[in-house]
Length: 160
Image (cartoon, rainbow, N blue to C red; front, side):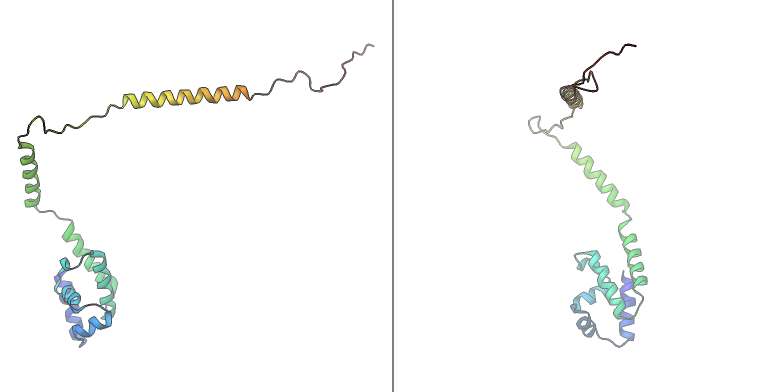
């Protein structure tokens, strides 16, 4: 980020623009521009806001904002994707120290293990009851079987 900030500062100076003039045009404080040009990313609360400010600054300076954004993204990738070996060893040491702590049996917090069998059994019983209710409702609402197609008609036999 320091390289990108130095480049932006160099371009600004080559255009003959003071930091106060640029901050006034961009409606930013001179301190924000100084932090961008010095590569001080910790001065900004939100890294995405910083990216947006860099894009606006690049556009103001007449630079290709996609190139500046790509350079900033490369910095972010390098900065955030690597965890130092010291940090890994420190985390491992802290975990081991935490496990070694002596504690009273009265203050130990035991983790409860969930047994899925009662929940599975309750679910199956619920499904079975639901099926029985559906079958009963279908039987109750079932129409009676018609014995004759023409109700009220007189059936007579013809003989020849």
